[in-house]
Image (spheres, rainbow, N blue to C red):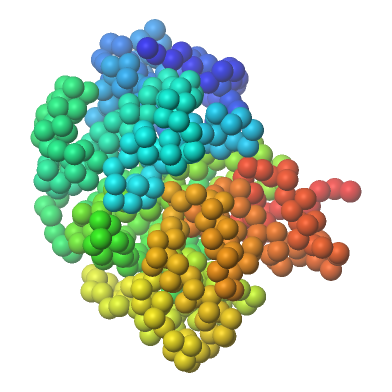
Length: 521
């Protein structure tokens, strides 16, 4: 089975042979348009479709550097799983596992929403804690029968949930084999396979290769150099703006930012709990602008949770965003904001605490309070860089903090109660990551002391990765939208934001950055 075109309606091709920028959500890509994008190596469509070449049996990303195959030998797929289901193997040169994931949102069709939510959860290791995903568990999370899940999933994507999951596992394993020296057994388990035997069998069946044959030469393992992998993203991406946002909020001892004309880099300490074990270490994120990639280096101490770390980094830097889909809705109101992304969070709990500290005060004041919190409660950590020496305090540590402890840092009593309550909730299992149920988590947050709608929406925007979050009570938004001082400004801001659905989180970032163009009267 192959798919001649990616969706349902054809797109237009301009006189240069490039496709016009359209949304991945609304557009359909004809086979000829896909071929034009592939010949142009247009990075805007990386991860939007894949090309299967019948003469080689290989499928590639649109940005693959090999000579373009003949048109009659090309078939196009919206998902890597579709290409593999049709019998194609991933290209060893362009490496489909490096492509940005396709994040699509809708606020209309229920089956469409359910199918894409199912795919999102299958992609996100945070969604499954310490258990392996299954169709039955996925159906329960969605509140539907497993039979209905299979039906809507296959109708939307042309493959079953199990085929989709198998492709995701194999591509994760392929990246780990190519970029690291992790033992085959560890690669198999980290990729979600129950045993090495099943992993070897699946790999051979899909790729006609033994895993060891696919392994590329890699640098020798070194605790100071770490493990390096590459992560793709789609242009345009305003890297300078993303790092400037982070620099404004940077906390000494846990993070450092370098943003210059020839160097865009972030470093930070990081801790994460998985399978009941705490993993700590450091990360280095460097942007390769020419290749539209991030080069991620992870300390050897985090190798056991590498797929989870990769997913968190992709979310923190919004690497899976589809600018075409977002800009189709927002460009007219924000004409200079096309490359802006929503800064996420490596650690949702850290982001939530910082959001609480930032209530009703300036960013600079919130940064000062967060710095004091890290200096007092952050655990020490050795890194290759002398400026990075601590971890952000864990939920279990802050859950035991007393009012006197926090008061001495200048944190007012209301914020003290909010931080302790939030810490106890997260230590007790409240999820604050992209795999969490958004509305349920927002409701749980608002039930905690000292957390209102603004804080909950801000956490949803950055930690839960909800693209349609909107903190309607934000004073800065009121000023920019010129509703401050009017009766019920939050309601007026909410009404003004309806035109930006389902990308209101991106509209908020663009509004804060000053790229909003006030409509002419």
